[in-house]
Image (tube, rainbow, N blue to C red; front, side):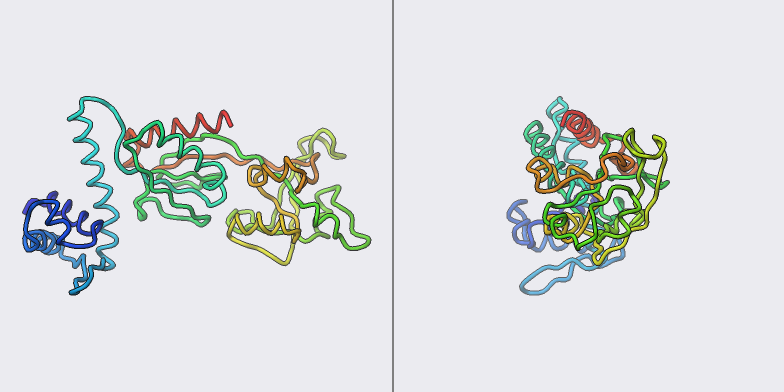
Length: 306
């Protein structure tokens, strides 16, 4: 058995959803295609597909194998295509991960311009505010905001995110009698604060005294805030601030349009939050990928020239 051919056949069967479709593509019999997949299963010692008279479904082992096999097949096709063309035109799939808010508001326009510049590339963009294992999920590159833990991943800093205290005009208008808008970080303990739980700091919000603060410039204060809503979704945190439910501690790009219109305001401007780095990270085995390198350059340029 040619294991690579069998792997390619297995990937196409899963993508097409049937043995017959792949048989037509390859001008082969359905039986021959089925035998190739069965031989691969025997070689691996695992059942990859659950077959019924009406449909095919990946087994648990098949799902894990498919993610890796699909990426490997695509990389081989890309390498062969590059050699055959005698040029370095990028092609094939690039799997990118990012948080939901950043992906929607900042990364999608970068993806669009990258695809326009490289028409043979296809991007699988996965948005998730929670942690994902890049190797397990078969991702090529991910955008991470904040300090990175030690890991075996390859990281490149490509930008900086500014955070600020954000409140809507509706929230400030509805303040209870006797409660004023915060003037100092400690005042936040009297306010309803919306906590985004995907940050390691959670409800411990840190501020740095600026030139207009009563403290010496550079003085740091950490305030443990409280509120009636916490969420692991940046989109829910954003919507809650816009609905006037409380004060948020968010990247300013999450509210660019609303800040420009005045719908929301930055509080404590003399007490800015520490900036957060933006990194692109990749599994070590993807460090030499031409597509990953090109995408990294494109993202870095876009973030440097917003």
